[in-house]
Image 1 (tube, rainbow, N blue to C red):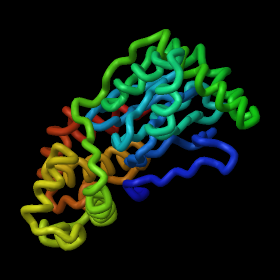
Image 2: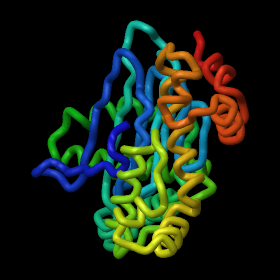
Image 3: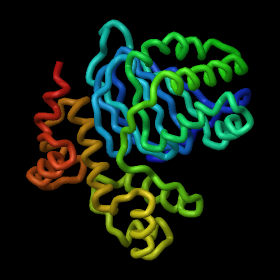
Image 4: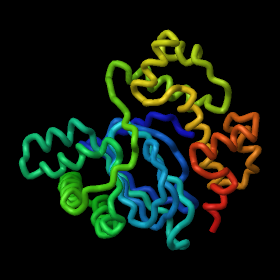
Amino acid sequence: MKPYLEHLSPPPDASWSLLNRRLDDAIPFEWHHHPEFELTLTLNSRGQRFIGDHVGDYGHGDLVLVGPNLPHTWASREKVDPADPHVALVLWFRREWIEGLIGGSVELRPIGRLVGRAATGLAFDSRLGQALAADFEAIFARSPSGRFLSLIDILLRIADADDGRPLSATVPRHVEGDRIRLDRVLQHLHRHYHRQVSIEELAKVAALSPSGLHRMFRKHTQANVSDYLIGLRIGEACSRLSGTDQPIQHIAAEVGYASLANFNRQFRRLRGMSPRQYRSSFSR
């Protein structure tokens, strides 16, 4: 897995970032978060998306707005057209930047209402995503000023056309003073989730007492360390089940479960099905 916190830098001639991602094999499970809003349009792909505590299917034209610091990833199952790649067109922008634009422009208030609801993640009708596909594709060929105007136009069209369906029941709470400590802890968990990680070890990483670590972690993730660690392990298991032919018992051991029975129990609790059933759902 990649580091949990993703650092994004806009190009020197722009105030926001974008990515045209085309993958022949698959969209991999890469669980991460960042302080920017993320608007993603996924084309020619089917699979599952993971946004906060939401797990759901996606298809061609999947259009999602993810709020700041909300963990997320997509994991593909198949292409719609096997001859073409999976496509993810991604636009990132910071809260202070978009709020600065909105604050000085009455015309942009619909965008303000849109991003104000994005903390949980918002999924829009796939027909809207398909209707905007040409605009997303064209934005990459435009000048910096042209890209800026295209982004505003896309956001206004989304705000006018569809309220969006909230996705995650839990929302990350961002407090700047704890963010560096929390990111150190999350990165440590991400690197070592496959082994036993003690509260004392994490407290040392955070430079806090064990009780202080517990309070900070629950405050910002709405989960305790144990439940969060289980989520990381099961998330990695989902990636391996959907993208490899590894035996289930081998996957269980690789993500930190010495007991296959315990792995099966935790997997069913979080995903509502057995690992074998989950893998079967990705079969062509």
